[in-house]
Image (cartoon, rainbow, N blue to C red; front, side, top):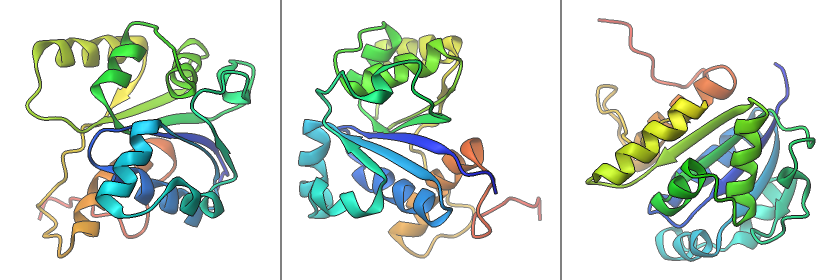
Length: 188
């Protein structure tokens, strides 16, 4: 396995569990994880999962403050293999789509685009309005991969974690190689 350096941004969109499950999956595969949790991402972690950002520090290699634009990931010269924003709020998506890098999450995404690195955005919003759709189109044209947090049901998940992991596995398949536990359609 090729160890990767992955920047993970958790924003304030509902679905903080997606970010936490991705961090844990990446850690279990031995990847180097750099994490930023936005102010509203921290609030969502508390509200939805009952945890705080400090509880994630032992699961990552580096954790940054979202306002620290002097941090390594704020520069295109800082070596990252990928940037994943999971869940990605519509505010963050809009900032990335329009080059408005006002915090470290948006700046790391901006650097990923300009350096032609892998950028994966996992929006968790419904319904979508035309502005959301156009912003997704814009980031896709710029080179990002948009993987909406739309879990699969064909593998008959038996828990919320299995449902969430169907999205996390899609993200992992674009970052590394699929996990052995990933549900894979065989056509049967």
